[in-house]
Image 1 (tube, one colour):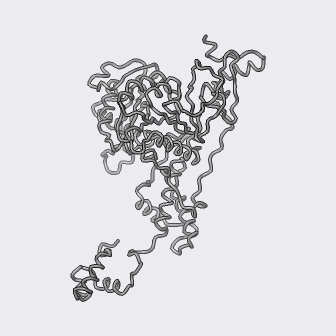
Image 2: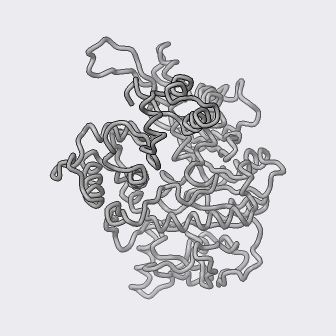
Image 3: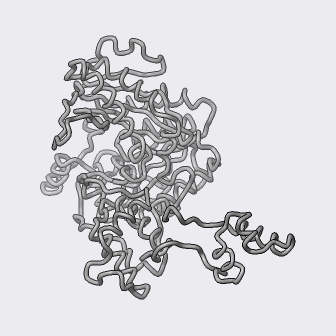
Amino acid sequence: MPRHQKTHSEEIFEKARKLVKNEGYSLHKAANELNIPYSTLKDHFNGRYKDCVTQFGQSPLLDAQDELNVVNYAIFMASRGIPLTRPVLKRIALEIIMQRGGDERVNKATGPSDQWVRRFLQRHHSLSVRITHPLERQRAVLTQDTVNDYFDLLEKTVISLNLQQEPARIYNDESGFSGKLNPSKKVIVPRGTRHAYQCMVSLSGHVTLLNAISAAGQTTPPMLIFSKCLPRMVDDGMPDSWTFVNNDKGYIITDLFVQWLDENFIPFIGERCPVLLILDNHSTHVSKAFVDAASKHKVDLLYLPAHSSHLLQPQNAGYFHILKQKVADIVVELGYLGIQTLPRHMFPKSLMQAFNRSSGNTVASAFCTGIYPLNKSALGIISEDLSAILVEAPLPKQKQTSKRKTFTSARSVPSAKPTKKKAKSNISKDDDVVTTAIELTNDQQVERDICVVCMMGDIEEYNWVGCDKCDKWFHYQCLPSYVQTDVDLSLVISTEWMCRYCLEE
């Protein structure tokens, strides 16, 4: 808007009308009294601007609703791993303009100008131009139907636990630290420098951070898992609520995950049970020991769909990368003292400083993925008249079968045993499998055998394999390759095949 022009509210003109009608003011006197241009006041009295919206300059190429649809579509496609480029944005805008009847200011061959794209991005601060990073093919396979099923299950779980107004009872966990620490701060270099290089500080060995955050902005005391041995003085000056353990590779295992639940998570939540803990599909999260421990402490579990953590998991989507950047900034500050490899005993102290620099609002904002407040349209929606233009991109072709164990949909494991009919199974009560009924997204209880590996029933294109000694059943695709070879060999030579549980006896 030009600096010498400004808009006037309707209340000012109403006040001018009262001065002219009730006080006997002339239009000139009322205009001077209220600091309104005489011509503008006269036009309003004559009804020239009736039912009109004051606007300076040319009319926009897209109206406000169309631009909002394009913004939501850009956000959705970016979450799918197929972000829009400038040429694609111009082509979409051209199609919408032509659908609305066209505009003589737009070139029908190239669409809106580059200046329009730049101003479009300036008007919508939720969008920015960034350099792309590679995304695994499996993550781009995530469909809108799968996301909708997840939000339906999330809504049902939140309502059943009465958590609509209880953000302090909704949690999410995440882990992982390794390699070089890359800072995010800008540096001062001579003008004209093409590449601003900076020495990186490496992290000695692999360290797994296991913690949980709540929708209320709280962070649970973490567990740090070091590879090989624990460093000396690792707990010197650290809070007593932090836990330090070690194993050969520094990765999370089932026993340590259960230990974190018992020693870190449960003491932190105290009497706020039941609570909802949202997890990904890591093998340690679906073990019988962990599910039983969670059920014992009234912790309801909600598992995310496969390959969706980059989009739906709060820590992964909105908080964990911020924490890593803060750790990197702190470590690089230490690098000015000549440190090239960060000693392992200094990592917890750097991490504690990063926690202190992260506010509660930063933690709570990570749940903007639609978990709290519950928002099924967090990925954006478009109007029906643009559904032919803003279409969902085709999914890449998938292999028919996969030897990797995956869960394709969201699943909820209630902490208490359900009152509904349980899933039938040929597995005895003493077998090492989860016996709690798993609620599927279609709200139906399956009445079939349960695979010992994935704890699921029938899966399309998955074949069943039964142990010839006990009553355990497995999906053939869930077994490791060397076990599949034993199964194939037993079928060829007509011999018995026994599972690892029977072989260990």
